[in-house]
Length: 147
Image 1 (cartoon, rainbow, N blue to C red):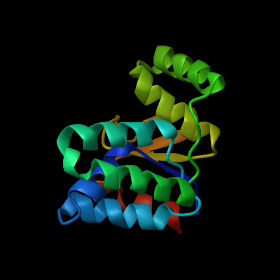
Image 2 (cartoon, helix red, strand yellow):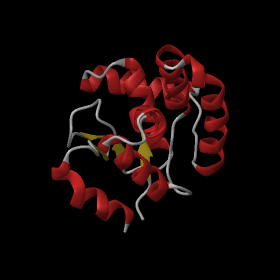
Image 3 (cartoon, rainbow, N blue to C red):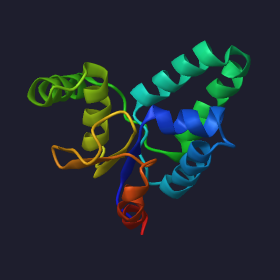
Image 4 (cartoon, one colour):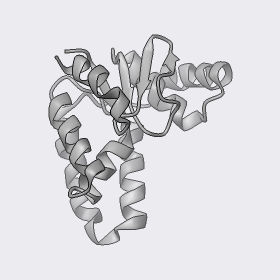
């Protein structure tokens, strides 16, 4: 299995919309990436921020859920080294800084793919491929990551 990083939007669909098509897809991806996947600490923070804003009634449960994610996934911190790499990515590739932080943390943790719907689908960033897991055209490529 190739090490895969998950963005906060996958966590959000799984937790806030589990019955939707995207929610079911997100849950499948989380289960498949478990144990060798990466969820950068930045993504956990974004997840909490959105839950707090959209569904304050489940915020306490979301805090508990990030503990589950931290136990099941690598959760690289936003270190000085990650910030420096993110600044370079942002400058070189025109990424928003916080997106670049996610990419830098994931890449430094050995991820070869970042699954997200927030960045350009198919883009290659320093050896890490960005794939939108909700684009059916990527199903075979994503299946190959998990085989």
